[in-house]
Length: 307
Image 1 (cartoon, rainbow, N blue to C red):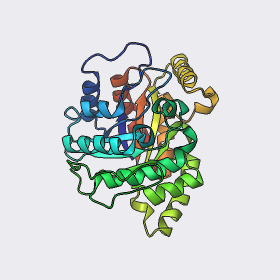
Image 2 (cartoon, helix red, strand yellow):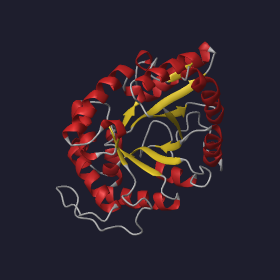
Image 3 (spheres, rainbow, N blue to C red):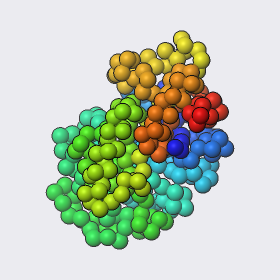
Image 4 (cartoon, rainbow, N blue to C red):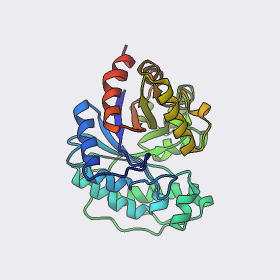
């Protein structure tokens, strides 16, 4: 199992972002042995949120040879042609390091801000993936119900077949069939699942892939939004978890045990369970003290998870 570091896009504590914050974070992740820098998408949120595509572009140099991933971007909200154009540019300037994770998004506020009907998100999303692929390759252009046929974009991505497109799903049967039908990988959401659910989903996904003549053994699975705060201070850990629950509007009891908040051994135990069920990547997202947490995770949690 490999680890990615989610950029600190949310202003959790009202301190904003000093110039160089993102570059320093990416350089630290590279030095510590992370394999990927990730960012995801919201137009509006309960807290200030930096744009994910712009943030990834800002760390191209500092991230060295690490992969860059959206986990996930919202093609329906952004518009699939506009997202394809941005993705192609990011792939070019990074030397072909982009993984384009996409999802429909679960926030009606994002759709309202973009002027798109929330109840149309699922059919729009499926069509948008086809438009994305067409825009990122020289393949046949797509004309559908929601989007006209777009142009082949120039410059093309550095990767010959375009960046791999990983599809987000919380693990429903319909979502997993969509992943198998349209994706090059699956992005699950850590705080919306458990190791047991991922294990069940992997079986269903493998069957759906087999029906399409594809193999599940080479189909990557990534776990995003793995909120992280490694601490031996029980009071501080409970406070961080309560703050997260309030931000996400979830019960504390629902999040406890699903995210990496607490002592290193407890966090490592959760990682081991995910490794056992076949998760290939986990993208951690520090809740505070971002670079310190990157270091604590790698030095304290990962060695325990490997035992």
